[in-house]
Length: 289
Length: 300
Image 1: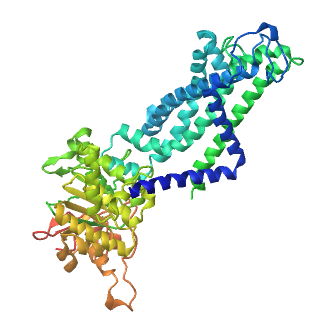
Image 2: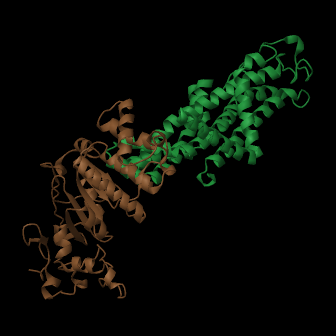
């Protein structure tokens, strides 16, 4: 019983320390608030959006007012509601893309770094190929051949992101595999697979977590860019980039159609970047007690 | 470049063999070779490693994985860096027992508690959930010992386990090893450069120089009647109560770089008894009497 209390105290101490670090950096706190807010909005979207995402031709292009705080778009849909539903799209895309990139990039990076030699050389050349093509171009090529849709877009963005994960993990692996505890693990007969996934991977987690956070923000940005170009979400999906594309022609008079989605994208990516910065500081071993 | 070139020794059941040598003499490489843990580009080029009647150099990886940690266990010099920093010590020892002995988690945990108590850790249940950096050096080394004996190995290889600890802790750890040895009956290959530890702990001693064994004898015989000039030099350099006012004795020169070994007897540049023959031909390891082996031209 005593040990349970001690454990809880230990965990609270860690959280308290993290909170202390966040307090020192109000920007990362802001980032965290934004990210959490976004997740909250996305989860509770149907409860928050005041009107369903349906055209009301009689109230097209109404400016922001009490009834419609962000105004209505060219089809008479409430923009605030569309942004709220759009957060679901963006978050889903961001998270799934990063999950795919991680599940491809991390094992490849670990294997490459640990085994070295020809395997390493081969995998690195493959990542070189992907990294040498501008990501937007690569995504456009993929979507041009496979056809624009949200799932295809997610695959395309993930393909542009996995090499960075692989390289990151490979670098960490190279450093960690020289450590004594890896040799000790071998002396206790851990197999190669076991060493890679149970000993090396947990020691690389910090940079992976930081990179992942930045990547979610980036993925959302890319999704918006591709949506803007018409290569991602198709109408009438309430995707922010798509909203900017359709609202663009109504600038500058009916400015609310394109501006609010733009602000949403901006705040979201900013939030993830600030949060990532904060995480990096917390996880940096040099700032540890 | 051969880090080890001509090493022969035996360890009997329940016997403790000390392997002494200076840094660079090839002691650690010898130990790693026994467990076939030499990393690329290093290789074992020849010879045999007979373990319980079988030459394990011929065996495949799967066989070695069954041996390492289970029938031959190794303890490393720096316990701090030999423990994975992101797992609790409870997790690390149960990893081993669950893998080798196929214990269930529950059994592994209660076994871990027993093992940690055996090695003298206090407040064991709480310690299971602690991370290596929360423990002192002495405690970490005890954890390593517990991990080493967890599967009941026939041979324990201890690579300078007390070198990084202070003297009082060192004495505790040695006491622990003695006690465990009695209880478990494991053979020990104890590698060190500390002659005092060897005298306290070992049954027999082998002295290594520049990759070769130059003398080997039961501990009393070696300390009482050292024959090889190198061994004699080592023993003479130990500070003694009666020589408090004299300068400490040393062996002139320094250990050769293994890339550029001296011809003939490797010790000849530093040997006070070196003669013509020592420069040209390497002395063989000869049986001096029943237990005493020696490689020197000048000592017959």
